[in-house]
Amino acid sequence: MSNIKYILPIIIIFFISCNKKVQTEIPDSRTKIINASEINKKIKKGEDVTYKNATIIGDIDFTRSNNASLITGNLIKHYVNSAVIFYDCTFKGKILAVNNNKDFKIVTNFNKSVSFINCTFQDTVNFTSSDFKGLVNFSNSIFQKFVNFKSVFVGLQGMYFTKTHFIEEAKFNMMHINGNSNFSDAVFDNYVLFQLSKFDNPVFFNAAVFNKTANFTKVKFFDDVFFNYSEFYKTVRFNTSVFRGRTEFLKSKFNMISEFKDCLFFSETKFSDAEITGILTFENSLFYISNPNNFNVNLAEESDYITDGIVILSKK
Image (cartoon, helix red, strand yellow):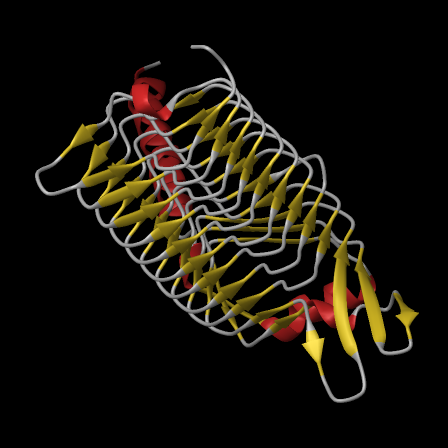
């Protein structure tokens, strides 16, 4: 009995030490290096692509799948049947979903979800003219170089760029988004372009920061749009845009030239407590319900608030 009394603590200590040894021997997955050729092979075979805490070396090319068709005489579409999920990864090379050469233009159709969450892109990212059938999620990511989502189509699962940081120029022009779009808390350090895009469902830019020029001209917002607490430090233009749903810019900051010329506002529109340092103009815009003369904005000294030529259809 006395022997058991002394042996039992030794056994317990042995198991504790073994457990600690196993834990300390788990490799740090953040040091994992993946060659892009490995990923490209999976894409080509139609296998799901899932990586976490890895550094990707080389270019990822979605235009080399085994499933492709000739759409027109010089347009080829590749179909990616893989679910694409990256979490907490760093990409040293380019991300390519389009290829232009003198004979053909190659674009990509993504049939499943595409997620790059909490990722860092150190080179260019180009999804021009891509079709996304599933969820598109780039939340909490950093784009250090030029990023291009021109002419993309996104299905009902929507597009998410919440808390995403764009260091260089970003293009989101001529998009068509069926589902929700969320750019809340995004930071745009350089020029950003949304011109001629269409949003069928609610759009969120709450607390987004635009440090350079932002171009939202000729955009069609078919549902609610929210820019509450957003900050525009340079010129922003929404000229000739259409706002069919509820439109809110509550407590937003407009620091230079902010233009809403020739716009159509079909539903309730609010700019309450927006801070104007510079020029905010609604020249020649039409309001079906709200009255911009009653927006209750905060005007700094030597700032301008222009409502020349507006048309108000309601009696409110």
